[in-house]
Length: 337
Image 1 (cartoon, rainbow, N blue to C red):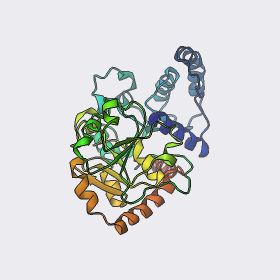
Image 2 (cartoon, one colour):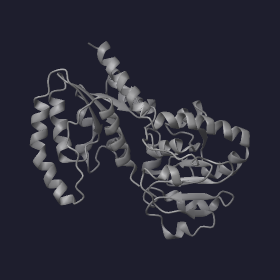
Image 3 (tube, rainbow, N blue to C red):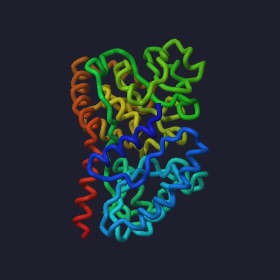
Image 4 (cartoon, one colour):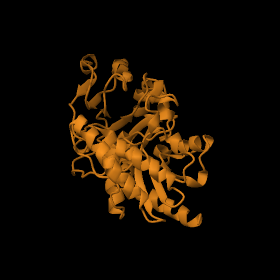
């Protein structure tokens, strides 16, 4: 289960479906040393392709760069950004999540602030942060939520009063709050993903189902709600990843919605407004509030959420949101001519 690569791969498929040709070769070499060597070799090819792109060409790409040749392409795209129209889908902002002195500074978005790129940001909270950091508002587009391309079986989806799903990387470094779920014995938690600590798996209210590929997860998870929680504690917003939820769209939100599950998010998360406006779930300040909050929701209210979730899920798995964001970017481009 790798949400990062799933999000990037889905975006690349959507770019292609909209007529964008692959500027960068697809790297599918598992050996990291061979992949590293290959990345250097093709960097020259990438540089030449970028340098000879016709004036006025539109380029869509994922950010941040992972491979060396992607960094090379960004460098030369920045150099030619006055003559090209570059649309950048932001997946992660390292300096926002980790600070400007992070060890991967070459992946920092700030390196491209003085470019002529158009940036597709996760949400309005992220856009506000970017404007504060000096980015031009007219070059910023709201994605709203990530797409999640997949096929859903007829029996997938949330069921009333069946517990809470937690899917993703369950490593203690990213999900410290898991070890505290025993403090909420009234709620059953269904966990899916790698790196679950043994002591967490042994909790009486914890049911661990294993780890599955990203395309399979939506059809295997069971429960009533999907939990989107990156805090170190039961209280929201604690720690590096917890605070980052003020600005980012965790990809697992899209996973839950496309699978037919209403979501639970932190009340101050950037996605909270989107969830509440579309009646796709509910928000809490602390996971300790879950028993009372869930008890307030009738089966009728839950089924209304399910209807809204299914409608939103259809959009998400069709690539609707990135397609719309690119249309907005192209319209802004026309207006700025």
